[in-house]
Image 1: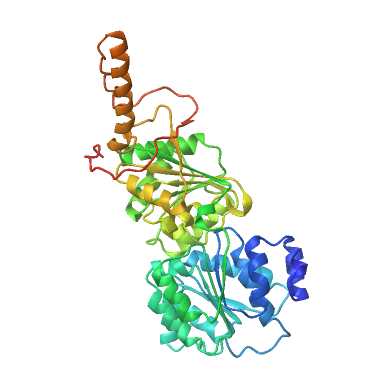
Image 2: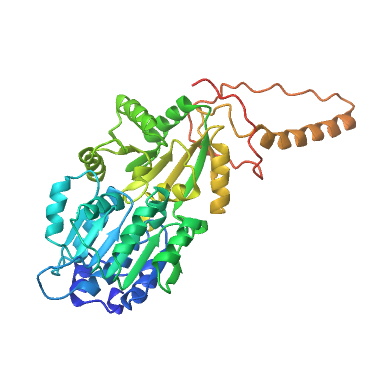
Length: 444
């Protein structure tokens, strides 16, 4: 029960209004030490309730009677506009019975309007590093009186090249009393360096490591011959899977636009989201998905973080992400808060090694699946299938010795892939992952 925490009665009233009763594991672990003023390094899955785990202690520190605002008292830094907007909504929900005011500063919005907002001095400023640094350099704000600094999705900020910007902003918060660093993954050497620089005698909390990723989300792979084959698989999945809302991830903006055009032409209610879209278009895409005006969002990794959409129960990786951490964030859009989800990755010959490395990183093995009628000729590296063929040949030779008959070699199956209709079946393949041998891809 949230009532077990030493939270102000106005926050408990907001929690009751929002029907928050039982804290999630990350909230139960992080809220008590955060209320005590400890610096925290918290690693937990997306959808596990990280936002409330830092927003509630933050609001509890700032809560009080109405007073003139003379300085920004808390700063929350995030990697993307979408995540920043999501956090602003959560802060406003939890602070609805308080006098605390919050403001948002991200790229894609009017610079002068943001400058006017900063002159009003919100208690809590929620921002992306690049745009906030522009305002700092323009003399629109001071951060020396910030009491609490929160770095949310800190690993992603490093991945996006914000390390120097974040360090500069951290230095500006020179009188801060508490720093909270949250992420869904452990990150690498850059993250360890950041933790050492910005946290003072922190408590380290690791909830739901990646090896226990998304217990309620089924993870499957389907092999494909080329991008055109992948498109046919996406059409089949969107027409035959049971889902309310879906995201299809691509690695490039060009591929996202191309796939989006094909889906719309086929009659799917779809929107596209990537970094070249302006802020108005990005907001519209997300709102249409949330409200049900579109069932499918085609997106690059700009949508892999901060997107919390009720009923999003299918994620398709048209392209395999380049890292295990990015895979974690993509499929974290589904299976949230204990709901069931399905994540399907489409694997061509040039995706196999990436897929295998992500399996090793997660210490998991994805379910192999074949769509009857859409099975292609590519079923994994040749040397993975060779061991099975060799075993079969050996067995035939033994049998031929017993009978005195010659072993007749089997004809190679047609590469056309076959079968008609029927329900998709799942197949679990070989043991071990051998290095990929380069082979000429089928014509695009």
